Amino acid sequence: MEIITNETKQQNTGLAGLLKLPLGAIGKIKQLYKSIKADLKGPRPELDGISKLARIKSRFRIVYKKYGWKILAAIFCYYLIRDVTIYIIIPYLIARGLID
Image (cartoon, rainbow, N blue to C red):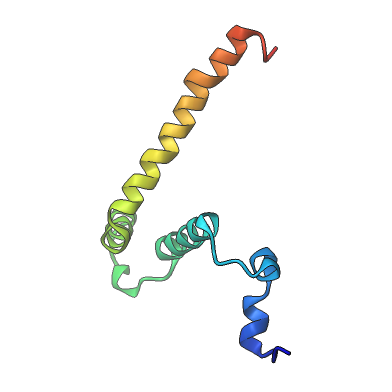
């Protein structure tokens, strides 16, 4: 018999908790996205008093220092997948007559 505590309740929420699976790649990507978004939008008192453009540059510099190459790899993969889909796969399917 398992003792249920607050920690167990929090771990057992969601599909991963129901199946008792560790956090997979999709979950890690979602956590990384949420963390980056919070770092970009969160309050930064050290950035008060400078222009808006300088604040934006500083925030991206802070995020790059924290996450490094992962940000650049994510951006590269996003545009690679998007461009291949738009410029190669969709025209190929149209030419083959699979999409009207």
